[in-house]
Length: 223
Length: 134
Length: 283
Image 1 (cartoon, helix red, strand yellow):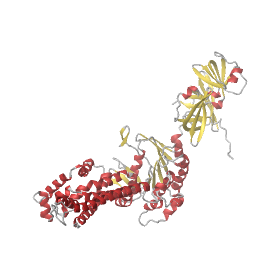
Image 2: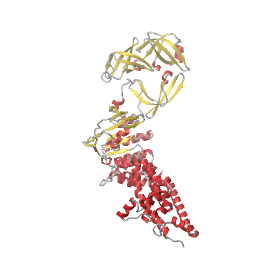
Image 3: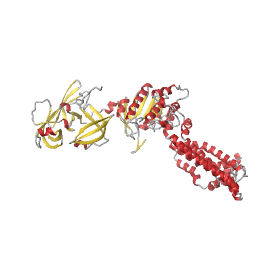
Image 4: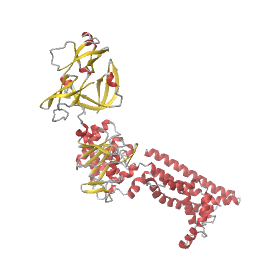
């Protein structure tokens, strides 16, 4: 019988990462879509970096940065008693950075496709920026939000390299499903690896199917 | 559209209507307009104006002093005739300029109009428009 | 500064509108009409401005006063209508209500603009003219002092245009608005506005009543209309030119010499002496 802890840990990690990214990405994307900041392209490039970098590169740098032997890690450990190497918290931070483009890109493109006059019309009707975002902008980019949420969740479930570098494989702390599969294979337990892999396979497929169904349905409903 | 340049020589107005005399090529044209010097600033003696009338409003006469009501009478010679099936276009030398007349081909043949013929071009007063040269 | 096809152009205008007036802004594209409207609305900030509405300063660059869009008593109708796709017609109107506003105005406007049967539809199911009526109604919900219309009727066919002009006039009068409208249509200006400003390259070219501005005495003829050439056909030795003016097609005879200057799509003035046309009562 397989150990269920990695499954539970993976779900927890993906859920928390998605929630943090959603709350972060909305204001970030709004700012990127509407501000006339000169170095916007630089920021957009940095956000997209995890798409092209090997996960081990990001993991390596995070490991160095989080290490208590270096300034940043020491600072966190001294002042906040926060250790990020080989801990669940560290895993969350790494996942947030690694999955950032999967949340930001759909939301940003949704915002850019929205006519700017919608926001302006709301302003001329006396509505504040906050209430405009809440009642007009977000409801009109719902498909983009859904895509962002699902893609981020799925991507976090599927990550391996960053997790291995930053988290290692501590049971109930950092050993997620993808790591568990790797370890089962290493110890020649192909049956267990097969169960984990099968669960991830079915999960990922259902998620992608859901995204496409939602997007197709939205298109016919909206336009 | 026939256009000639001229200068206003006299204006007679009554109840919003003016009878304007304009001199062009030593010929006096008369035009009647629904304006007076009070409503249109160009209506003053000496003002340079364009005299405008449509080709189809130009009547041709071989008789040089017809006893008819038409006031604008221009001495012309026929420069060329372009005959169509129903209509004909006649180009007339009037002083330095050329004016055109469009009449029916039937009328053209009845009058036996030929190139170089001397004719009188007639235009009714109410067919002449004026446009100020500013 | 205006960003135009010819590079940057300063927008330099100054004018006054009386309360209750209907002002039309006319001019080619790229002359700053929309920018001007947006500055009035507070959607665009200009370098040097002074905007005062009924003794209340909306913009003054010298004293660093810039009233936010939300705090200006305006209704703005956008060229693309900008209806909220996630809300029904009625909800679009209700969205404009402020706290403690009487909701009566929404049903009043729905009735006035004849939107009863559409009130539960989403904007994407409406025709252009219907969307325009909703946008107009929504702009009035706050009972603004000033109604700003950015070429509201340009995308509509003629029949729709005429109907909507009547709606605009009805609203302008009923709610005693001061209205500023951008338009390309001279007949529209004559029908709706008391005053017109012609903008050219960021400057006011002419200002006055529509008849002062447009009825230049270029020709003494009293029977005049403007239109667009839609066809030129040869008949015998003459040419027949069809001109589309307002809602009618008229035919004018021209000679071969004249048609050299004419081409299809050209704007022309058709004139005749007032003595010629025959006038009859329509039964």
